[in-house]
Amino acid sequence: MTDIGRLITAMVTPFDAAMEIDYAQARRLAQALVASGSDGLVVTGTTGENPSLAHEENLRIWTEVKEAVGDSATVVAGSGTNGTGETIKLARMAEEAGADAQLLVVPYYNKPTQEGLYRHFKAVAESTSLPCILYNVPSRTIVNMTAETTLRLANDVPNIVGTKEASGDLAQIAAIIRDAPDGFRVWSGNDSDTFGVVSLGGWGVVSVASHLIGRQIKRLIEFTASGDLAAAAEEHKRQLPMASGLFVVSNPIPVKYCLNRAGFNVGGLRLPLVEADEKTGAFLDAMLSKYEIDLPVGAAA
Image (cartoon, rainbow, N blue to C red):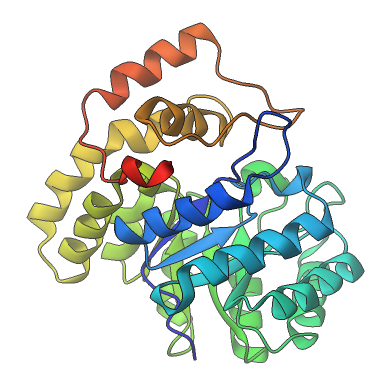
């Protein structure tokens, strides 16, 4: 199985002034993220404004980012939608693009039952040879995928290899970690939960903050995974203001603002998302001033 990595950045999608994807800047950003500690990249996930992208844009950016990073990092295609047939189409496109794995979000808006979730993910995974990572984010999807459903999929479907757990429910996450088959990976889906999830035996994090402090998050994971919990706790506390601050308004509004302010231009956001207002910008500026930025912003030009 492909080693997808402990630190995976949920990469933003750069746009130019006409709000078209800036593919050259996406390549530069991907390389800069790898240089600052990322083992893998989720491309066109929530942070990548997936709902605002066309299928052909997904295919091209997956292809370009994989070409840019080569074997230096894994590329996880954000191919999940709330329709099974549509997700299967995107899963096959992710294979065509050369992605290493795909991230499949719990279907949103249509509120499936747990049995519906099971059948959806099983059907999608069986349509592709790629490793599949489940993505449970009930704050966006309304429905929470239970530990029982996650474990059923982990045991029944060989190429479902892990889950990004953004429920924030550490009891649920602990149950998945405890009962999952060998090799099934659990990534925290929230930067603020990384310390807790990894200390319980989770594998790592799918991170937003790693756009800015990737090496520092890598250090937190290494401290925690090695059992140096005192050092990990101190690092966790130091990173918390950024981990929470990047969600002061809807993601990816804050992280795009911060990248632009740090000198790595990623452009604006497609509607219905809008840029940070003056109050939010002032808050984010104050937050940024407290951290050394790991991203090599000189790579932006």
